[in-house]
Length: 185
Image 1 (cartoon, rainbow, N blue to C red):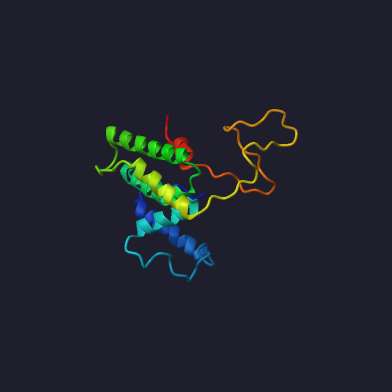
Image 2 (tube, helix red, strand yellow):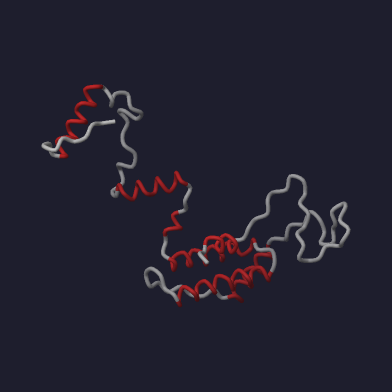
């Protein structure tokens, strides 16, 4: 550990003295990256470049830092693009109603810049879902709706989860669940 700064010496000169002593000892020789250019020097704003690199390294989406209206607009776009992946008309209605509820809440309690976010038209989204379903036939399920696992004694009801096949991919969690986990209560 370094010694304390002498009271008669200014802080700047004391730091400079510490650095020059470390250079003489060779503390800065053979450091990783010696002789290589600094990353992101071609970009105009170094602070923003550092932040983008940090977010990428930590696996944080830059969308997390957007104001609420812009997040809702992105969610509306994502819903419109991915509506064909939803399994039923009721699931589409639920997704649209949840997003519209968030939009109305953001209008009641505005945060960030005053961007207008239009509500999602439920009927237009249903029509888009039906059009996408007509073009692409639905995937056949692994087990029928009344299928039972060996050893099950009671018949399955429509709300029960279907049994998973060996090696099946994990179920895809909806954006509503992910969003509800993030929202403070």
